Length: 67
Image (cartoon, rainbow, N blue to C red; front, side):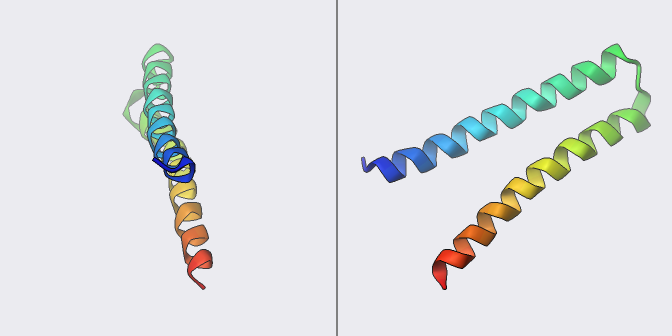
């Protein structure tokens, strides 16, 4: 396996694991602080926007490399 391919796979897997762990932390925080449905949705929206930014960055970089 080429090092570039290994790095790409590990980044996908490890960042995915990090996102899942952050989702668990946000859920636990919402539960312990008794945030309710609306507060929990806001917390997960903030996490989702961060993940969306990471995904958009990946597509932008891939698009720029194709030019």
